[in-house]
Image (tube, rainbow, N blue to C red; front, side):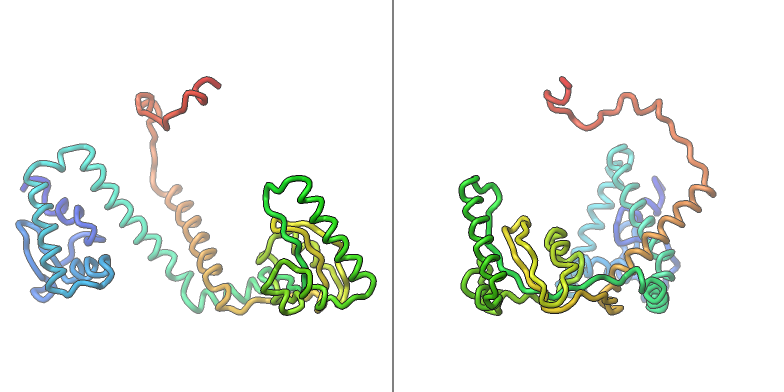
Length: 287
């Protein structure tokens, strides 16, 4: 049979790891030379958001398989572009399935908790709890408006240095309406949660200490520490995704290193000369 059953199976993205032996119960339809399995139907239903009933999904899957059969009979697998797309789909499915299998062991609950304990020290981050007053300055503001904003924040700072209550001044003067009602108080902030310039300006303030006016992308600020800075370790669930991503990345790097050492690769750069690269603009060509 032309191209064999394998091509028809790989052309359907519902077929992940090749043909498997199946009993009658696993078979839900046969379209030409292609057998459709329960796994194919299940994947088709999942890929459509679970909105289709099994009978509806089977009808739709049969229609797609009819098109697949028709394409094979029309010889489309002999078209290099079509064959390349089929091969690309097969390659991506297998590559991702292999990565999932290899990374699975290192991403188990037990493995991630062990990783959490081993990295507790590096996961620790500084936390601050401050109140602030902001005079907002929009990006691109003209020099005159910016100078007026600086004069305003300096006047606010002078009032605070003179002993006025920070909360009262914040309620009266801050452009941050949400925090102004709370006397300028912000929720505790972990390093990395806000713009670095803001965190750097308040990170070393002792409890009750007032910062000098400073600027961020949002405007001009003055802040007061409500508590001394402290170092906190996030709970496991807060960093579970981060730990899993790091574990998968390390597993993938180790896998690729092993595969490169075990499987020979030969490139033919001389065959690339007549292949078109990214199109350049006229300006880029003239440089």
